[in-house]
Image 1: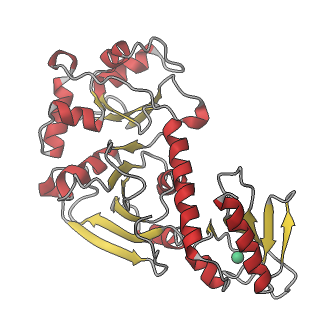
Image 2: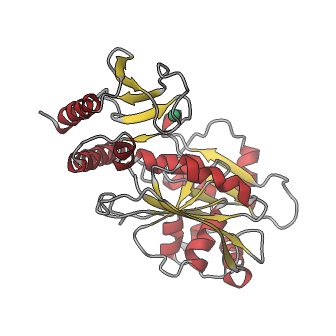
Length: 355
Ligand SMILES: [Zn+2]
């Protein structure tokens, strides 16, 4: 018998033992029971919590309450809440297995290996200077590769044999090449461009250039600093997020003292939202993470409160930081004074730290 089958059997048995009502639904692919998180309604026959019991699904043994929107994996908290008599060792084994499955699957997704122009002749030295002046540190060949910086769009297209780009005029491409600095997105599906012209030649600041290797639903538009050493199975990730790309590079290079800590995963939301990035990591199977947000000052602290509630089953710690003397973190370290404005420590602690 597989772990999955035996776990489901012991789960159903535990429900029976506690006389908890449930019924099979959605063609036996879900169990429906009352939600002990929100207690559904006064009417005891109304149930809203669905548990996925379809072994083929990615969401196997995850639950969702239609009433309070609570969702997550059946973990120790869930078992305690329903007072179920289940061996948590089985559960943890299952979670480990599930994590491995996710990781194998996500590793199969091919990230197109793209070349980055690095020779002096191919770099736009004005843009390199701009970057150094703004961020306060020198760009070496290694750093250009690590941050996936593109200063010469035409050279980049040529060495990667990209002959055709959809939906962009030559005139626009010229402008982008002249006034914008580029960064490759996490999966190399987009060249994310930022306007760095000091005089107002163009009044738009961002442009996301789609590269022609991916189906639309596979593309990830956010930016992440490469970390090839992160060990998904044994490390607790520190998911570090800032709004802009310069901000996250500033956080990496100018703020965090142990920046080479392999548990650190640095991301910029790039016009998307925080939850999309967190969701990306959740889907990879990161079930217990620390979240560090380096916020723009015009993004009010109130707008982060929902994170705690929504991520309750997944996070370990959440910290939100601001730059006391500037708008954001995409600057030289002399222009940054970090203050921690909010901090959550999860009350639901995960027993097994090796997960
Ligand atoms: Zn509920």
